[in-house]
Length: 180
Image 1 (cartoon, helix red, strand yellow):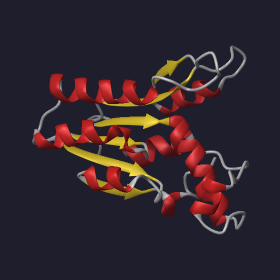
Image 2 (cartoon, rainbow, N blue to C red; image 1 turned 30 degrees about the horizontal axis):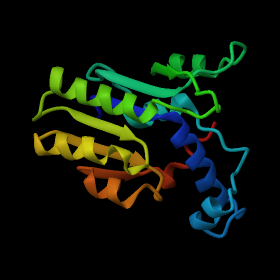
Image 3 (cartoon, one colour; image 1 turned 30 degrees about the vertical axis):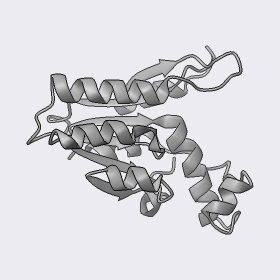
Image 4 (cartoon, one colour; image 1 turned 120 degrees about the vertical axis):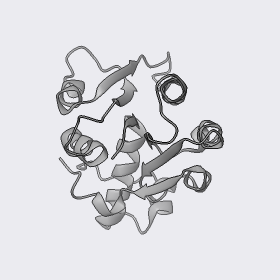
């Protein structure tokens, strides 16, 4: 079971919609879905199912389950569902061009801080739920110091990220189970 969990919500959500588009036959393969911006707009991940999948049912050893994303408009209650599911929220404002910023660095910073300040090298499992290679330097440094860093993501996660992880866990087989 995971001791520390860090989720890049937008990355998980967007890429999950692509994976579902392939499963639904809307795209021939993941490359087609990416290149042609094909999504299954009906696919949504259940925060409760995601939390249970990542953290298990016994929460006594869980030290942190952090979910990172963009601050929604005031009338949007999406993050309340995540909070009720057990996630600690880390929200950032979008930039002037309405682009999400500070999420990857926020995750890398908190992951590193938790590892070196509170983590136990021989005991704790750090789980990153993201798919891009921006996290590779952080994972490589943590692994050099003996930490176990698991990456959980869709099959089309960056090859470099998958290779850097202590272990990679694919979400593709759990696509339907995680559906809201």
